[in-house]
Image (cartoon, rainbow, N blue to C red; front, side, top):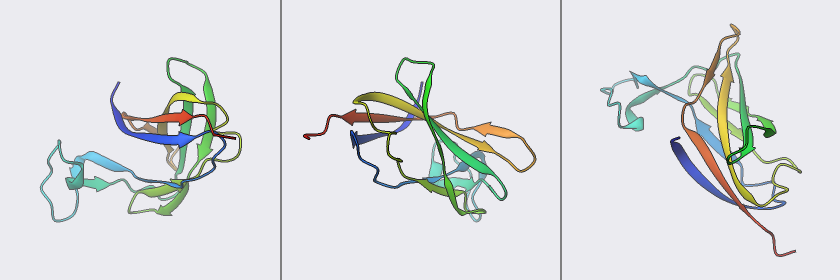
Length: 124
């Protein structure tokens, strides 16, 4: 499985805010030539009217531990953000998250690459 990023976090934290830009690897951004290996050339996904969720599970598990609903910050720019509500980062370990978009039409698109979360114990 491919991971786009690894986030290093601490048990009990509710921040940092996670900012994501959702892009289409099959469409070039305005004024650019599409390069399938360079995400800077990909067009943002229009998420007008969509709901974007991040689902988190422990690495190796099939059980979803948390589902976070993201806040859309730019519909046509494909940008969203979320934080980690209390209880989300309550356990140390390695987790993976997927991003799922439910469009206004009812269609669902899941980002192929996962986000890895490494959560360490807090000193308290």
